[in-house]
Image 1 (tube, rainbow, N blue to C red):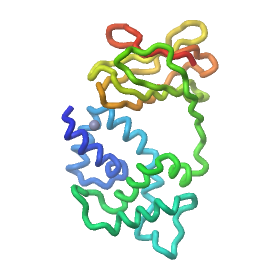
Image 2: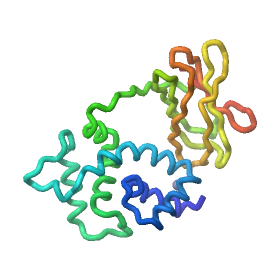
Image 3: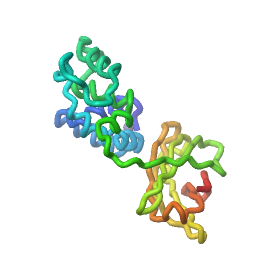
Image 4: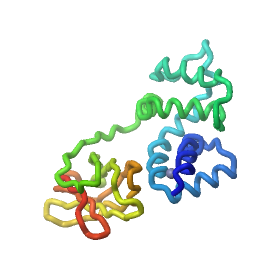
Length: 220
Ligand SMILES: [Zn+2]
């Protein structure tokens, strides 16, 4: 993966999620995303915000109109400033996408909640790491769902290009796959893994490298 490409594409993810890119650029971004787990992870975080943010039109955020309930005034001011500013270096997004990206980066989930107050809450539960390979820096959270347990794994130092297996071990000692991910070296990953083991039945989960070594283990 070319780092410059990655950096450039990453800047376009907001516009991509908001469907603001032209055909050629969209194809380029899509091709990169298909092969880049970091951009996939980032897009997964941005995508849920794209729908509500598409509804924000800076042209209608005039002095006589109120911003959507809960949208902080400072952010609105920043969106207006962003619009007023002359063309910036390499700026390719149309104003609404740039404004939306500022909002998304500045407040992320908060705006998502403000614009979608009825969205169900999914409490994240931090879990302690019992075992961790020295090259890896990671933290983990789990989410209790009716259909099983979701793991949100954040970290870096997973060997670049190596496939890692994540297993949930239930109370009876049975290992159940929660999926796989590719290591990206020093580049951080945010990875959501889903298992059919219910939260109450889960004892721990493990991340296993291709050599079979457990590189991360945690009790839940
Ligand atoms: Zn990338």
